[in-house]
Every structure is written in C-alpha cells, then in structure tokens.
Length: 164
Image 1: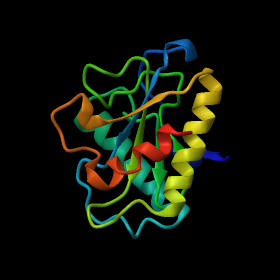
Image 2: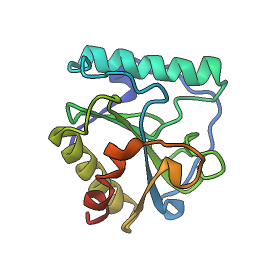
Image 3: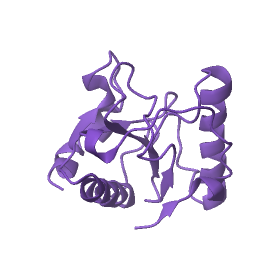
Image 4: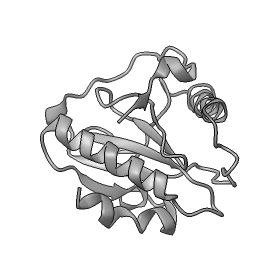
C-alpha cells in the first residue's frame, strides 16, 4: 500500500506535537469532514493535495492546533494520505486522542464510501494492525463525542474494517 507523504501534499511544518508509541495505540477512529459537502470533485492528486492543505490550514490557523488533526485521510479514490502519522497523538476525538489513529474519510454528504475508499481503509487498517502488533478496535467519532460523525454511510462499513 502506498501512503502519500506529507511532503507530497505540501504539508506545513507542525508545531510541537505529542508522540505516542505503537504499544499505546489500541483504537482506529473514523471521521468525515466537519462540513461534508459534495466532495466528488476530489478525484485527482492535485485536488486531494489542496484539500489536505485546506484542512491543515483550518486546524492550525483557526483551531490553533499544532498540525492537521488526523493521522491519515482516505479519499473516495482510495488514495491514503499521511496526516500526523501514527507516531503522534491526533487531535480529532476530544478526550480520546492518546492511543488512537484518527482517519478522515473524505466522503461528502451526498456520497457513500466508494469501493476504492473501502479497500483503502481496509488496507490502512491491516497495515496499522501489523505495525502496532494487535487488532485495533474500530470506532466512530460519535462513539465518544456528541456528534453524528462519521455519518451513517461510513458507520455502516465499520464491521468490514473490524474483521481485518
């Protein structure tokens, strides 16, 4: 599986971030964009790169976080992008960040996860399970925070991911 690097999408340098070891990671959280408008136009590397930079800018400049809040982002195309990376605590589930991998599923409110996205998520989950040495529990953001995130369409794929 190929993961787009931070350099490839033009990530800014993060401010100070908290490290986490593989031995700490036990959960794999799914998210959708805070404003899940139609993202079907994101079908090329350049558009996905711009989306990544926009999310990072919003998190760093508006929310004043140290970096993009997600560990990884998986697009409808199936391409996987590195956000913070698994060695750093994400900023995506208030009060439930340490020991997690936070994955943004870039799917809009008029879309269902594509087959390519599901395959990308399964490959990413399998890789993370292998890297941390255990089967990570898959959870929805809304399991720990009062939100509908990641929405019913993404929630519906959690059983597929948990089996991997």
